[in-house]
Image 1 (spheres, protein in one colour):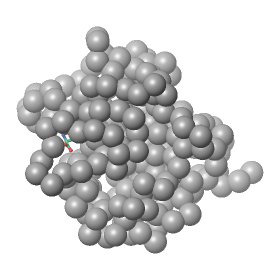
Image 2: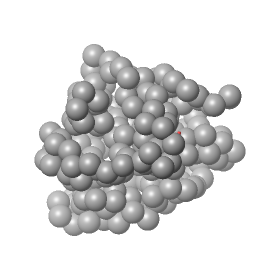
Image 3: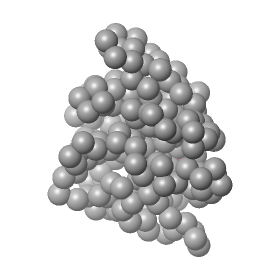
Length: 198
Ligand code: GLN
């Protein structure tokens, strides 16, 4: 069986949680997954997929640009973005900081910090197409618009909180919450999807 090389952008945020969740998901699915902590342009090359963790989208942008990784990230075919990672994927960003940009690769519009400040963070049990899960929202963004190829995977009330987009050989998965801290549901799903394209 082929080994999947899956990177976790490892500047800050839930890096070890994603690493662990990926490893546990791979074990459950009996897949060979090589988890790579990515901090350089070199490490980005030859990945089958990348996870962009939550954290701070402006900081992630600056660090990726400083390392000359921005252009390479746009070329990665399978990306799972959680929270700040989902912000980075979006075509359009509301309430951006001065100079802030996104990779503009997934056809969603997103509003950062839409729920308010850090102390307005919350947790909730949500239903998703992948199953029920506990979801942790930390200064989470809201998805305001989805493109025609984007499929909703989870809603909380009327809000879309997880979705995916498949265009040709590219696959993007976005979650407004932090799946890495509660289960391996989304990591298993992501691995299954990239198996199809890798
Ligand atoms: N609101 C943060 C940002 O703009 C994201 C928060 C998170 O990733 N938990 O980057």
